[in-house]
Image (cartoon, rainbow, N blue to C red):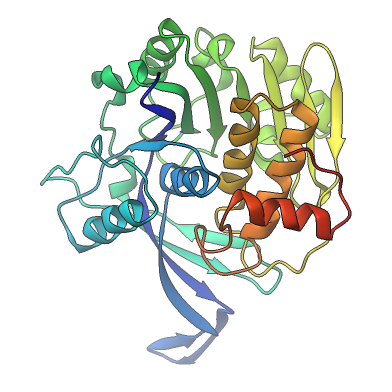
Length: 317
């Protein structure tokens, strides 16, 4: 039996979340906001924590600096039963810290820095791919997955072991890649999950169906486009499906896409159907937005089951 159900590979960061930021300065020296908080984050961290909460044996491959921020993140991962034996702690690369401004509607804007550029070459750790049933690559087009050779090496190593491959995406920040740059890798990926803005950026299309068609033409097997308050859209070569969003009062959308991914992976790896997995994924994303921070809202698979029952959505989980 495999040691892990899922290994999440990608960025680990500390989020400094500022809610209710008032752009009008109170003086020449400062501004005001409703609140500020520190939260562990980054795609790999958010996904790993959520997957562990959903009951899967989860590990993470990421890089943390030998600094206080890295210590906090490692401690939080351990607290949520995420295996950290593959976490790297280089002395010369600090833990990335992101400042996030959250608006009243839950939407956000973020500030990154050069620490986010570090590529720790996950393809150099082959034991990860032999010990797991699935990997989540989060996120393509951002370090460590902003190098076509790295992306190809990781995907090929996973495929050689029969590992299921999920990949999220991000808009580029430091290094800009195009879909064409990943032409030899995208056909290896089982599920690609961009949000609407990312899909528009990479495909040049406005309609979710047309966005999905462009991505399917690259060879990706299954495409899920996250549409925020409009739900999500799935398409492969056999069928297409739109799943509406749940009506909730969003507080903070930070990490909603990562929790969505966790729900999707959780159900598919358990043998669930795509429609059921999408409903669970949407529920996980919705639950995430009800509190501040990417890892605070989702508690368990049972919580997701109750959420789906409360909103009157049939569930088979």
